Image (tube, rainbow, N blue to C red; front, side, top):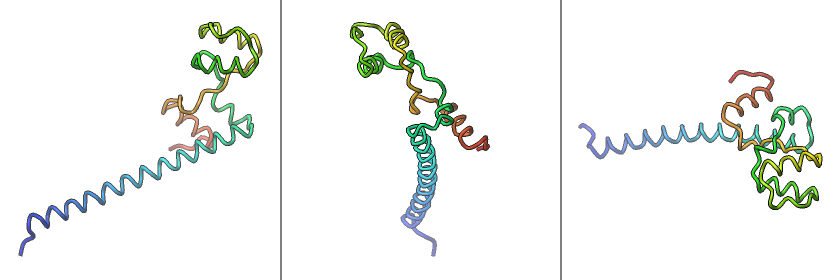
Amino acid sequence: MSPSIADLLEQTNRELAGTDARVYRRVGEHLQRSGAALQSLQDSETTGSPALKGLLGKGSFLNQSVASLKRLCKEHGIKGYSKLQKDALAKVLELHGVTPPQPPLESLTKKELIALLRQLLGGAEG
């Protein structure tokens, strides 16, 4: 007796569901590993590891938003910044000796993140 169309459809749906589950599981594992590596990097950054901070590169005021530059002015007690534009804000911060923050991980491209992870893992090929 040959299987019915309903049986064939059910079997096909089970196979597809199993394939999707495996794909989602692999993607989830990859995201967890990547997230753990990035969290480790951020944790090391907050503990002050100069070697790991160097991996992110030097920050730039011009890569920051105007709102974040104004926040830095406020945090450092700088007066008269409210009407300044981005270039002027950057100059004021530099004149007051404020160090530009390093670029946030979220702003890095995929290529930059891969290079960063390779450096972090000691040049291991992926």
